[in-house]
Amino acid sequence: MSPAGGQQPPPGPKRIFETAAAAETDGGFALELDGRRVRTPARHVLMVPSRALADAVAAEWNAQGEHVDFQAMPLTRLSNTALDNVRGREATIVEEIIGFAASDLTCYRAERPESLIAAQQNGWDPVHAWIAERFGTRPIIVAGIMHADQPASLLDALRDVLAAADPFILTATHNFTTLTGSAFLGVGLLGARFSPTDAWACAHIDEDWQAERWGHDAEAAARRRYREGEFTSAYRFLTLHNDR
Image 1 (cartoon, rainbow, N blue to C red):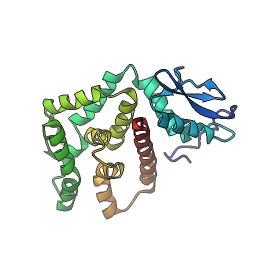
Image 2: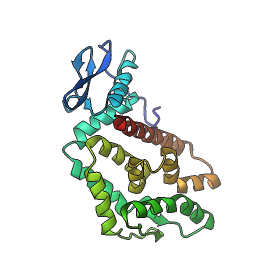
Image 3: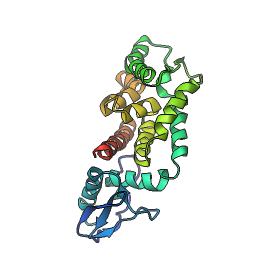
């Protein structure tokens, strides 16, 4: 079984190269296999902005055995995503993130019991305090699940920050947002305001509260471990991108 709960995928393509390495070129660092440039699934040159990220991607390729297992190469997959699916679609990706902010996980609070209300306040109120300090507007909190519009000034301020990000930063931030359900946490990670450990815990306050009382479900725990691995990889991807 795979970590996500499905069947084990068939082996990837056979390894036919000896050495992967990063090569500095105009505009960044390209991955080369035995001196030949690697291309993404959409046939773009696999080129990243920082030497640190390029070396880490090369290390993933060098770590492969007889077959190339792309599932075991998260930095390569994220780089491919940035080049094939985000670059040229930045405005669309920004709006997808803003869509999460418009109904952010951290804005919808329990009405009972008191222990869950307190857990949400302890975890999410500091997030909102930072958002208010950074962007000048405090998010609107809702008791229950009825939708409430967030202030347009807040969404516009978030949009301005994201619009300045390159495809690699947007890829990481989009992953943070979709994996946690919170654009506020995603942008906080982008700005190094929260640690990945704290952000992940904040995203699972409700789930952890339930588990403490009713126990853990094995399949749900396996899905969470898989998603946490993807989240951790996205954070490493961002950190390596910024290491210049």
